[in-house]
Image (cartoon, rainbow, N blue to C red; front, side, top):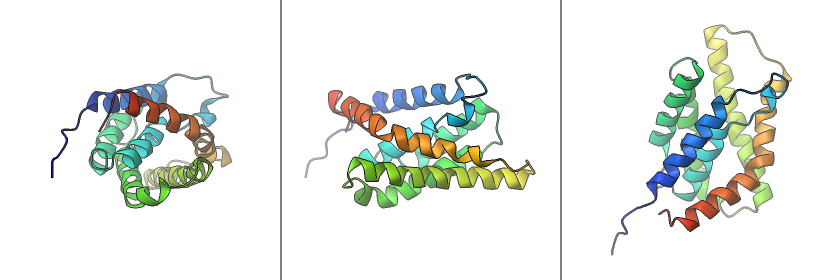
Length: 162
């Protein structure tokens, strides 16, 4: 048995950097509720595509970076993204065989779980409850999933990320 040396790690890192930048990009107030969870979407893709390279540890690191960039409670996004990576890793073999529209529905559920964890942290820290628009990023993530999947899959194939 020969083990191929993994390469293309810079593509994975670059996609997370772009996701972090998109997560912190200043937007007008009226569109803020519609901002998808970019880091979570990229983490879901890479965990499903390359579970031996991207998993809970990467989710934790990206979450800590997101905590620092957004100035949120340190560990809040880290725990959420690590949990998201764990759930995605455990279900990746099932979800990968779904058609793209079913994957999008599953991704919406994964994102809702992630947001539920963040909402739990908000409750623990005493932040006031949010309205129904808090859940909109799960819907926008579901709508964007087919495009994110296709773009990242093409990048993975073009640069032979293994």
